Length: 343
Image 1 (cartoon, rainbow, N blue to C red):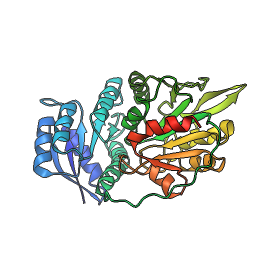
Image 2: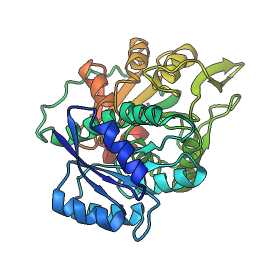
Image 3: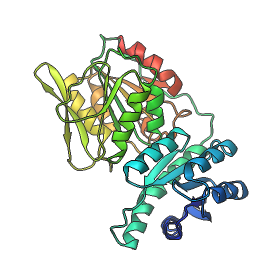
Image 4: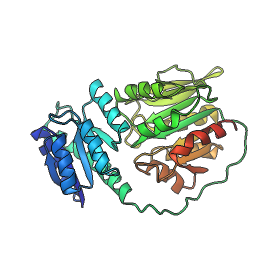
């Protein structure tokens, strides 16, 4: 059983999350704390496998509680429970930067209680299972099998896909890259609207690169990062001599919109295989089909390694399919990408 602690000042929310999670036979709620201070005390007393942590609470807020939990339990998975507002997005990104493992947006309250319970169950339970499962995996893993890379001329673009743990991974990856990085960069991070705009602004402030939320018609330029907006797919298309972004609201793929596969498949049409495709930490296997298409055309495929991933679902799927040319720790990725960008 996965033992979960819920920390929220709302009795209704505590009851809703408890009901949603205990419908899953693999999860049991071992405690429900009423504020951050109570939550920290219960972490030490109950030693849960994972904490669901509200952000805005009296006495001690979630950000402060997170720091105290991290000081005592550095590897304990923590999922932030936040609102789908600009303030909530900013606070959630702060929490992720301070060591939160993932987040979930609270139900809007517009639907019925049963609908809210179902929404929380369907979205939160898989995150809990993935995060706790990732923590329980033994650290000693066999060396992954990688493909031999065929030498070729310098690539035309860098494409990145990520999900759980992605915001922090993107910060670590993009911050060291120089402003004159020679390739245009396109990124799909699984996130809702509002959150992606905030993330782009935050990454722009951390990096010498120009990072912006993509809009239809944006041209792929060296030194610029285009981030897919929440709830819209990002595809690439050729217009004359340039490659431009094109957003669409076509159905989700892999339960995601934006989806990594959409970006990667479109890149085949405009770049062939002359790209670097990077799969960072994330749940599920979004990106696998797109990597298969790019790899068939000769793209260079790089996966984040298991030890540095919050969840090794997406990169693990690519490695398990035998499609990765390199499996690289997050700290080593910026330098490696600079080398690959030069051809």
